Image 1 (cartoon, rainbow, N blue to C red):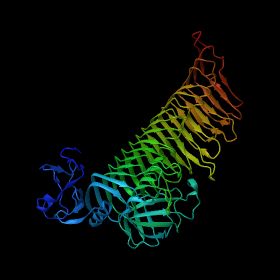
Image 2 (cartoon, helix red, strand yellow):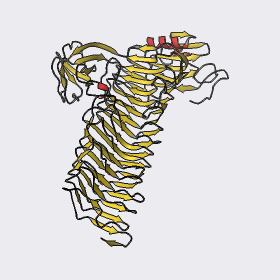
Image 3 (cartoon, helix red, strand yellow):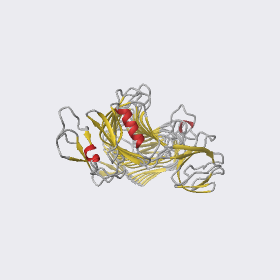
Length: 616
């Protein structure tokens, strides 16, 4: 807002609506749209539009900071609440708004005990600032009700769109049901049992029809716990919230048991515990919000925008989370450890301090997407995910030695897809691992890299030893690196099959481009390495070396070397591999740059001596 018309002792937020409201200019109907308000005591006739472009929002209460304190009025000019204690006036003014009503807030407020809201509400700030100094609780708590807990009366299978409940009386359209198999085996990360959230479309007796189908592959047995929630709808925008200490136990905004909620144009600074937290929410949007300096490192907190247990259809769009320990995060915890699903972070900018910039704990989500995000971080991963399905697309990572896409607390039959993504300065562009302190061996159903471009990284891909069961299918296509310090592909575990095809790989300074290492865990089968361009300007190691490998196909590739590197070598316990139709360019190359064990074959490979300018 412009500072034009500001008096010497005032603030741009000190405005009155009484002259217009009291005169009846806006009419007497409750909920009349406030098109204009006038400034107090500035001697100007200027009317200030309180609505955005094409905005027809109506307000039931308008709260303003005045010269004498704070005053809330209704559209008829009546005083709703007034006083000098800003926080109590704000709390009571919000309480006076009817269910599904709206309040416009103007001015500066000193935060106190949490303002709890248990109704649908629109709360819009206009130059509204909250200095929140109450540690240990949220400034705002928006919370729907938990109706009751019940259980599945019959089993529910993967793909089912209805569930049978022991108790369903009172359940209606728009309610949420959270399934939690509390007695099931802890097959998700950190030993968490299966669970998922759903919205209700209709009920017939004890049969509840869901908006989406059951996604857990094993389904749920009869007796599975079900939480039934009655969500509220909240729209909050235009507030600047700040707390005194980024390393303290300060909380910003909580949305729990909400549906169709919107949080827009919020600015949250130094909330060392949580900035904005969504729990058990459905179809909610967080747009154009900024969270700064949320980094309580000592206590492991510092969550910028956190999607907690039991959320579905969540979009975090156009947000910035900077200097946070966990800038953007998906976790499952609290009394309802229900994995979320359908969570998307889009066009966000993040920088991390003490943990991953885009973070999804194992067992916290069935599917999570990071689209068009820009990530700057030092000493920490870019994405660290344990979701059953993770999609990273159109992102840019600028790192200082850590992994760009990393894994954690992993589950079973997971899928990771990374497409059209640029990575600079990472230790490893894509790193698969498991955490040793958890007693499970995660498996990856599919790892797909398409259009991933790595620049100045240590490695391109690392399948780590131990703590992982296997990768069932590895697909790498259309990818590029300029140079890597170590191996391009370091494989120290099991791959059941897949293809590395149509890529352009630059220098590997100190190791092979593709190396299946000689470890007890390595077991590579049915891997096709075809139609790639491999370039080796300086290194001298063999381009592709596969230990403990069988039935692999290395064909139709182009190998370009400016040193004495070999083309391919079978390692320990490798057999039945095929090396065919490749073209090898090198200065004074060996007559046969392929080294094979018994059972493997090489044929129709062309070798060109770049020094003599002749084919061998």
